Image (cartoon, rainbow, N blue to C red; front, side, top):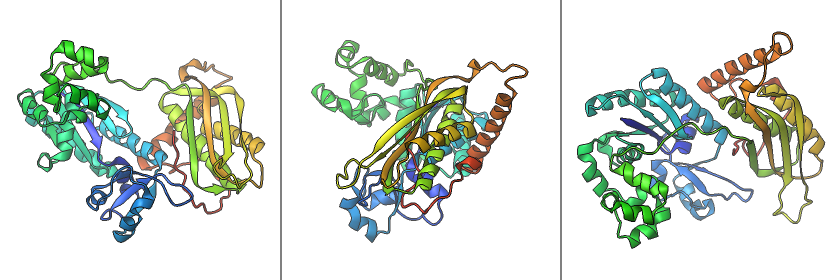
Length: 409
Protein backbone atom coordinates (compact mmCIF):
# COMPACT_ATOMS: atom_id res chain seq x y z
CA UNK A 1 0.00 0.00 0.00
CA UNK A 2 1.04 3.57 -0.65
CA UNK A 3 1.45 5.73 2.47
CA UNK A 4 0.99 9.51 2.44
CA UNK A 5 2.03 11.57 5.48
CA UNK A 6 0.90 15.20 5.66
CA UNK A 7 1.90 17.60 8.43
CA UNK A 8 -1.06 19.47 9.92
CA UNK A 9 -0.82 23.28 9.64
CA UNK A 10 2.91 22.76 9.24
CA UNK A 11 4.27 26.30 9.58
CA UNK A 12 2.07 27.02 12.60
CA UNK A 13 2.88 23.63 14.12
CA UNK A 14 6.61 24.32 13.76
CA UNK A 15 6.26 27.60 15.66
CA UNK A 16 4.22 25.94 18.41
CA UNK A 17 6.76 23.11 18.69
CA UNK A 18 9.72 25.48 19.05
CA UNK A 19 8.25 28.20 21.27
CA UNK A 20 7.03 28.12 24.85
CA UNK A 21 3.61 29.17 26.04
CA UNK A 22 1.71 29.23 22.73
CA UNK A 23 0.39 25.68 22.48
CA UNK A 24 -3.03 26.70 23.85
CA UNK A 25 -3.33 29.93 21.88
CA UNK A 26 -4.47 30.76 18.36
CA UNK A 27 -1.31 30.88 16.22
CA UNK A 28 -0.75 32.32 12.76
CA UNK A 29 2.31 32.55 10.55
CA UNK A 30 2.51 35.52 8.19
CA UNK A 31 4.86 37.35 5.94
CA UNK A 32 5.43 40.91 7.07
CA UNK A 33 6.25 44.43 6.01
CA UNK A 34 7.38 47.64 7.62
CA UNK A 35 3.88 48.98 8.08
CA UNK A 36 2.99 46.01 10.28
CA UNK A 37 1.01 44.42 7.47
CA UNK A 38 1.33 41.13 5.69
CA UNK A 39 -0.79 38.11 4.83
CA UNK A 40 -1.59 35.00 6.86
CA UNK A 41 0.26 32.02 5.38
CA UNK A 42 -0.68 29.32 7.91
CA UNK A 43 -2.70 28.98 11.11
CA UNK A 44 -3.72 26.38 13.67
CA UNK A 45 -7.27 25.18 14.33
CA UNK A 46 -7.74 27.57 17.25
CA UNK A 47 -7.06 30.47 14.90
CA UNK A 48 -9.50 29.08 12.32
CA UNK A 49 -12.24 28.79 14.93
CA UNK A 50 -12.18 32.52 15.67
CA UNK A 51 -12.71 33.34 11.99
CA UNK A 52 -9.20 33.67 10.57
CA UNK A 53 -8.25 32.21 7.21
CA UNK A 54 -5.20 31.81 4.99
CA UNK A 55 -4.74 34.85 2.79
CA UNK A 56 -6.25 37.29 5.29
CA UNK A 57 -4.29 40.58 5.31
CA UNK A 58 -3.23 41.21 8.91
CA UNK A 59 -4.50 44.77 8.94
CA UNK A 60 -8.02 43.57 8.11
CA UNK A 61 -8.15 41.22 11.12
CA UNK A 62 -6.26 43.38 13.59
CA UNK A 63 -9.21 43.50 16.00
CA UNK A 64 -9.53 39.69 16.02
CA UNK A 65 -5.81 39.28 16.61
CA UNK A 66 -5.93 41.60 19.61
CA UNK A 67 -9.23 40.34 21.03
CA UNK A 68 -8.14 36.70 21.12
CA UNK A 69 -4.44 37.36 21.84
CA UNK A 70 -3.36 35.58 18.69
CA UNK A 71 0.35 34.74 18.50
CA UNK A 72 1.64 36.05 15.16
CA UNK A 73 5.03 34.83 13.92
CA UNK A 74 7.01 35.66 10.76
CA UNK A 75 7.64 32.75 8.40
CA UNK A 76 10.97 31.04 9.10
CA UNK A 77 11.61 28.76 6.12
CA UNK A 78 15.03 27.69 7.35
CA UNK A 79 13.43 26.31 10.52
CA UNK A 80 10.70 24.56 8.56
CA UNK A 81 13.19 22.78 6.30
CA UNK A 82 15.18 21.66 9.34
CA UNK A 83 12.09 20.19 10.99
CA UNK A 84 11.07 18.53 7.73
CA UNK A 85 14.50 16.88 7.59
CA UNK A 86 14.03 15.74 11.21
CA UNK A 87 10.74 14.08 10.23
CA UNK A 88 12.48 12.31 7.34
CA UNK A 89 15.20 11.07 9.67
CA UNK A 90 12.69 9.86 12.26
CA UNK A 91 10.77 7.76 9.74
CA UNK A 92 13.87 6.38 8.05
CA UNK A 93 15.35 5.30 11.40
CA UNK A 94 12.26 3.22 12.13
CA UNK A 95 12.69 1.13 9.01
CA UNK A 96 8.92 0.57 8.68
CA UNK A 97 7.99 2.67 5.63
CA UNK A 98 9.82 1.71 2.43
CA UNK A 99 10.88 4.05 -0.39
CA UNK A 100 10.19 7.03 1.87
CA UNK A 101 10.52 10.32 -0.03
CA UNK A 102 9.63 13.97 0.55
CA UNK A 103 7.09 15.41 -1.89
CA UNK A 104 7.23 18.89 -0.37
CA UNK A 105 8.45 20.41 2.89
CA UNK A 106 5.35 19.10 4.71
CA UNK A 107 4.32 16.03 2.68
CA UNK A 108 5.91 12.60 2.29
CA UNK A 109 5.20 9.38 0.41
CA UNK A 110 6.27 5.81 1.03
CA UNK A 111 4.99 2.26 0.82
CA UNK A 112 4.19 -0.74 3.01
CA UNK A 113 4.31 -4.33 1.64
CA UNK A 114 1.02 -5.10 3.39
CA UNK A 115 -2.58 -5.58 2.27
CA UNK A 116 -4.56 -6.17 5.45
CA UNK A 117 -6.04 -2.85 6.65
CA UNK A 118 -5.58 -3.65 10.34
CA UNK A 119 -1.87 -4.38 9.83
CA UNK A 120 -1.38 -1.24 7.77
CA UNK A 121 -3.08 0.87 10.45
CA UNK A 122 -0.95 -0.68 13.20
CA UNK A 123 2.34 0.08 11.49
CA UNK A 124 1.34 3.54 10.32
CA UNK A 125 0.21 4.35 13.87
CA UNK A 126 3.75 3.56 15.06
CA UNK A 127 5.20 5.91 12.44
CA UNK A 128 2.74 8.67 13.33
CA UNK A 129 3.51 8.30 17.03
CA UNK A 130 7.26 8.47 16.44
CA UNK A 131 6.96 11.65 14.35
CA UNK A 132 4.76 13.40 16.89
CA UNK A 133 6.91 12.36 19.87
CA UNK A 134 10.25 13.24 18.26
CA UNK A 135 9.30 16.46 16.45
CA UNK A 136 6.08 17.63 18.19
CA UNK A 137 4.50 18.05 14.74
CA UNK A 138 0.99 16.56 14.34
CA UNK A 139 0.51 14.57 11.13
CA UNK A 140 -2.32 12.93 9.20
CA UNK A 141 -1.75 9.67 7.34
CA UNK A 142 -3.55 8.18 4.35
CA UNK A 143 -3.02 4.72 2.90
CA UNK A 144 -4.43 3.26 -0.31
CA UNK A 145 -3.72 1.58 -3.65
CA UNK A 146 -2.20 4.56 -5.53
CA UNK A 147 -0.56 7.89 -4.72
CA UNK A 148 -3.71 9.83 -5.59
CA UNK A 149 -5.95 7.55 -3.53
CA UNK A 150 -3.51 7.82 -0.61
CA UNK A 151 -4.00 11.61 -0.79
CA UNK A 152 -7.77 11.03 -0.80
CA UNK A 153 -7.37 8.90 2.33
CA UNK A 154 -5.38 11.68 3.98
CA UNK A 155 -8.20 14.11 3.24
CA UNK A 156 -10.53 11.95 5.32
CA UNK A 157 -7.89 11.46 8.03
CA UNK A 158 -7.69 15.25 8.34
CA UNK A 159 -11.39 16.08 8.15
CA UNK A 160 -13.02 13.28 10.12
CA UNK A 161 -12.05 12.97 13.79
CA UNK A 162 -13.19 9.35 13.95
CA UNK A 163 -10.18 8.25 11.94
CA UNK A 164 -7.83 9.65 14.63
CA UNK A 165 -5.44 10.91 11.97
CA UNK A 166 -5.13 7.63 10.00
CA UNK A 167 -7.35 6.50 7.13
CA UNK A 168 -6.79 3.22 5.30
CA UNK A 169 -8.78 3.34 2.07
CA UNK A 170 -9.29 -0.13 0.61
CA UNK A 171 -10.87 -1.10 -2.72
CA UNK A 172 -14.25 -1.91 -1.17
CA UNK A 173 -14.52 1.62 0.26
CA UNK A 174 -13.55 3.55 -2.85
CA UNK A 175 -17.03 4.06 -4.23
CA UNK A 176 -18.35 5.71 -1.08
CA UNK A 177 -15.18 7.71 -0.44
CA UNK A 178 -15.08 9.16 -3.95
CA UNK A 179 -18.80 9.95 -3.98
CA UNK A 180 -18.35 12.16 -0.90
CA UNK A 181 -15.20 13.96 -2.08
CA UNK A 182 -15.54 17.31 -3.94
CA UNK A 183 -13.64 17.02 -7.20
CA UNK A 184 -11.62 20.19 -6.50
CA UNK A 185 -10.07 18.38 -3.52
CA UNK A 186 -8.56 15.72 -5.78
CA UNK A 187 -4.78 15.91 -6.19
CA UNK A 188 -4.03 16.85 -9.78
CA UNK A 189 -7.40 18.52 -10.35
CA UNK A 190 -7.72 21.29 -7.79
CA UNK A 191 -9.51 24.57 -8.21
CA UNK A 192 -7.75 25.32 -11.51
CA UNK A 193 -10.16 23.03 -13.33
CA UNK A 194 -13.27 24.10 -11.43
CA UNK A 195 -15.00 25.74 -14.43
CA UNK A 196 -14.13 22.84 -16.71
CA UNK A 197 -15.50 20.37 -14.16
CA UNK A 198 -18.70 22.37 -13.87
CA UNK A 199 -19.11 22.39 -17.65
CA UNK A 200 -18.77 18.59 -17.67
CA UNK A 201 -21.18 18.30 -14.71
CA UNK A 202 -18.47 16.77 -12.56
CA UNK A 203 -19.07 17.59 -8.90
CA UNK A 204 -17.46 14.72 -7.01
CA UNK A 205 -14.44 12.49 -7.55
CA UNK A 206 -16.84 9.65 -8.37
CA UNK A 207 -18.38 11.75 -11.16
CA UNK A 208 -14.91 12.07 -12.67
CA UNK A 209 -14.23 8.34 -12.41
CA UNK A 210 -17.51 7.57 -14.14
CA UNK A 211 -16.64 9.65 -17.22
CA UNK A 212 -15.49 7.92 -20.39
CA UNK A 213 -11.74 7.71 -20.92
CA UNK A 214 -11.97 9.39 -24.32
CA UNK A 215 -13.74 12.40 -22.79
CA UNK A 216 -11.20 12.64 -19.98
CA UNK A 217 -8.28 12.56 -22.41
CA UNK A 218 -9.89 15.25 -24.54
CA UNK A 219 -10.95 17.56 -21.71
CA UNK A 220 -7.93 17.20 -19.40
CA UNK A 221 -4.20 17.10 -19.94
CA UNK A 222 -2.01 14.06 -19.37
CA UNK A 223 -1.85 14.74 -15.64
CA UNK A 224 -5.65 14.82 -15.48
CA UNK A 225 -5.88 11.49 -17.31
CA UNK A 226 -3.33 10.00 -14.89
CA UNK A 227 -5.43 11.24 -11.98
CA UNK A 228 -8.51 9.55 -13.51
CA UNK A 229 -6.53 6.31 -13.76
CA UNK A 230 -5.24 6.57 -10.20
CA UNK A 231 -8.72 7.18 -8.81
CA UNK A 232 -9.77 3.91 -10.45
CA UNK A 233 -6.94 2.15 -8.58
CA UNK A 234 -4.56 1.96 -11.54
CA UNK A 235 -1.10 3.16 -10.53
CA UNK A 236 0.54 5.44 -13.11
CA UNK A 237 2.00 8.40 -11.17
CA UNK A 238 5.67 8.16 -10.23
CA UNK A 239 7.14 9.96 -7.23
CA UNK A 240 10.90 10.35 -7.02
CA UNK A 241 13.43 12.60 -5.37
CA UNK A 242 13.67 16.09 -6.78
CA UNK A 243 16.15 16.67 -9.56
CA UNK A 244 19.40 18.31 -8.63
CA UNK A 245 18.95 22.08 -8.45
CA UNK A 246 21.31 23.97 -10.72
CA UNK A 247 21.01 27.14 -8.66
CA UNK A 248 20.36 27.50 -4.93
CA UNK A 249 19.22 30.80 -3.45
CA UNK A 250 18.53 31.96 0.08
CA UNK A 251 17.15 35.47 0.43
CA UNK A 252 15.03 37.69 2.61
CA UNK A 253 12.91 40.79 2.28
CA UNK A 254 13.38 42.28 5.73
CA UNK A 255 10.42 43.26 7.89
CA UNK A 256 12.31 46.50 8.63
CA UNK A 257 15.01 48.28 6.68
CA UNK A 258 18.55 47.68 7.91
CA UNK A 259 21.45 50.13 7.75
CA UNK A 260 23.86 48.50 10.20
CA UNK A 261 26.69 46.73 8.34
CA UNK A 262 27.35 44.09 11.00
CA UNK A 263 23.69 43.09 11.05
CA UNK A 264 23.68 42.68 7.27
CA UNK A 265 26.86 40.60 7.49
CA UNK A 266 25.11 38.27 9.91
CA UNK A 267 22.21 37.83 7.50
CA UNK A 268 24.56 37.13 4.58
CA UNK A 269 26.50 34.53 6.57
CA UNK A 270 23.27 32.86 7.70
CA UNK A 271 21.95 32.70 4.13
CA UNK A 272 25.22 31.29 2.80
CA UNK A 273 25.19 28.65 5.54
CA UNK A 274 21.60 27.67 4.71
CA UNK A 275 22.51 27.37 1.01
CA UNK A 276 25.34 25.02 1.95
CA UNK A 277 22.99 22.72 3.85
CA UNK A 278 20.71 22.46 0.81
CA UNK A 279 23.73 21.92 -1.44
CA UNK A 280 24.92 18.99 0.67
CA UNK A 281 21.45 17.45 0.85
CA UNK A 282 21.50 16.94 -2.90
CA UNK A 283 25.14 15.74 -2.74
CA UNK A 284 26.42 18.68 -4.76
CA UNK A 285 29.23 21.21 -4.81
CA UNK A 286 29.33 24.72 -6.27
CA UNK A 287 31.99 26.88 -7.93
CA UNK A 288 30.33 30.33 -7.91
CA UNK A 289 28.97 32.40 -5.02
CA UNK A 290 26.80 35.45 -5.73
CA UNK A 291 25.57 38.04 -3.22
CA UNK A 292 22.99 40.77 -3.77
CA UNK A 293 21.69 43.63 -1.63
CA UNK A 294 19.06 46.27 -2.37
CA UNK A 295 17.20 49.14 -0.76
CA UNK A 296 13.42 49.54 -0.76
CA UNK A 297 12.45 50.60 -4.28
CA UNK A 298 8.97 51.53 -3.04
CA UNK A 299 10.40 54.20 -0.73
CA UNK A 300 11.01 56.87 -3.34
CA UNK A 301 11.67 59.36 -0.56
CA UNK A 302 14.89 57.53 0.33
CA UNK A 303 18.21 57.14 -1.56
CA UNK A 304 18.22 54.01 -3.73
CA UNK A 305 20.98 51.46 -4.23
CA UNK A 306 21.13 47.87 -5.38
CA UNK A 307 23.95 45.69 -6.60
CA UNK A 308 25.23 42.14 -6.94
CA UNK A 309 28.59 40.49 -7.51
CA UNK A 310 30.03 37.01 -7.79
CA UNK A 311 33.23 35.17 -6.96
CA UNK A 312 34.65 31.98 -8.45
CA UNK A 313 35.98 29.48 -5.93
CA UNK A 314 39.34 27.80 -6.64
CA UNK A 315 37.79 24.37 -6.09
CA UNK A 316 34.10 23.42 -6.19
CA UNK A 317 32.93 22.80 -2.63
CA UNK A 318 29.99 22.52 -0.23
CA UNK A 319 32.10 23.50 2.79
CA UNK A 320 30.23 26.06 4.89
CA UNK A 321 33.19 28.10 6.21
CA UNK A 322 34.66 28.39 2.70
CA UNK A 323 31.41 29.54 1.11
CA UNK A 324 30.45 31.86 3.97
CA UNK A 325 33.88 33.50 3.81
CA UNK A 326 33.52 34.01 0.06
CA UNK A 327 30.02 35.49 0.48
CA UNK A 328 31.23 37.95 3.11
CA UNK A 329 34.11 39.04 0.87
CA UNK A 330 31.64 39.76 -1.93
CA UNK A 331 29.36 41.61 0.49
CA UNK A 332 32.31 43.79 1.53
CA UNK A 333 32.65 44.93 -2.10
CA UNK A 334 28.94 45.67 -2.42
CA UNK A 335 28.10 47.42 0.82
CA UNK A 336 27.65 51.19 0.80
CA UNK A 337 27.05 53.08 4.05
CA UNK A 338 24.15 55.46 4.71
CA UNK A 339 21.63 53.37 2.77
CA UNK A 340 18.70 51.54 4.34
CA UNK A 341 18.60 48.01 2.93
CA UNK A 342 15.39 46.07 2.45
CA UNK A 343 16.57 42.85 0.80
CA UNK A 344 19.66 40.65 0.63
CA UNK A 345 20.50 37.18 -0.55
CA UNK A 346 23.06 34.57 -1.54
CA UNK A 347 23.01 32.42 -4.69
CA UNK A 348 25.14 29.36 -5.40
CA UNK A 349 25.78 28.53 -9.07
CA UNK A 350 27.97 26.26 -11.20
CA UNK A 351 26.58 23.29 -9.28
CA UNK A 352 27.77 19.75 -9.96
CA UNK A 353 27.56 16.36 -8.29
CA UNK A 354 30.08 16.07 -5.45
CA UNK A 355 31.42 12.87 -7.00
CA UNK A 356 32.88 14.99 -9.79
CA UNK A 357 35.75 16.08 -7.51
CA UNK A 358 38.71 13.75 -7.67
CA UNK A 359 40.10 13.04 -4.20
CA UNK A 360 43.74 12.07 -4.70
CA UNK A 361 46.00 10.87 -1.93
CA UNK A 362 47.95 14.07 -1.35
CA UNK A 363 46.44 17.28 -2.73
CA UNK A 364 42.83 16.92 -1.62
CA UNK A 365 42.92 15.48 1.88
CA UNK A 366 41.35 18.73 3.17
CA UNK A 367 38.25 17.98 1.09
CA UNK A 368 37.84 14.60 2.80
CA UNK A 369 38.11 16.21 6.23
CA UNK A 370 35.71 19.00 5.27
CA UNK A 371 33.07 16.53 4.12
CA UNK A 372 33.33 14.48 7.29
CA UNK A 373 33.03 17.62 9.41
CA UNK A 374 30.04 18.91 7.42
CA UNK A 375 28.29 15.55 7.74
CA UNK A 376 28.72 15.59 11.52
CA UNK A 377 27.47 19.18 11.77
CA UNK A 378 24.43 18.50 9.57
CA UNK A 379 23.52 15.40 11.58
CA UNK A 380 23.68 17.30 14.87
CA UNK A 381 21.66 20.24 13.53
CA UNK A 382 19.01 17.96 12.04
CA UNK A 383 18.64 16.14 15.34
CA UNK A 384 18.75 19.07 17.76
CA UNK A 385 17.63 22.02 15.61
CA UNK A 386 19.04 24.60 13.22
CA UNK A 387 22.13 26.48 14.41
CA UNK A 388 22.79 24.07 17.31
CA UNK A 389 26.21 24.04 15.70
CA UNK A 390 27.24 27.02 13.62
CA UNK A 391 30.53 28.33 12.35
CA UNK A 392 32.65 30.99 14.05
CA UNK A 393 32.77 32.97 10.81
CA UNK A 394 29.00 33.50 11.21
CA UNK A 395 29.42 35.25 14.57
CA UNK A 396 29.39 38.91 13.55
CA UNK A 397 28.49 41.61 16.08
CA UNK A 398 24.82 42.37 15.69
CA UNK A 399 22.45 45.01 16.88
CA UNK A 400 18.96 43.82 17.88
CA UNK A 401 16.89 43.38 14.73
CA UNK A 402 13.27 44.28 14.38
CA UNK A 403 12.93 41.61 11.74
CA UNK A 404 13.73 37.93 11.77
CA UNK A 405 16.23 35.66 10.08
CA UNK A 406 13.82 33.52 8.12
CA UNK A 407 14.48 33.06 4.46
CA UNK A 408 12.93 32.00 1.24
CA UNK A 409 14.69 29.63 -1.06
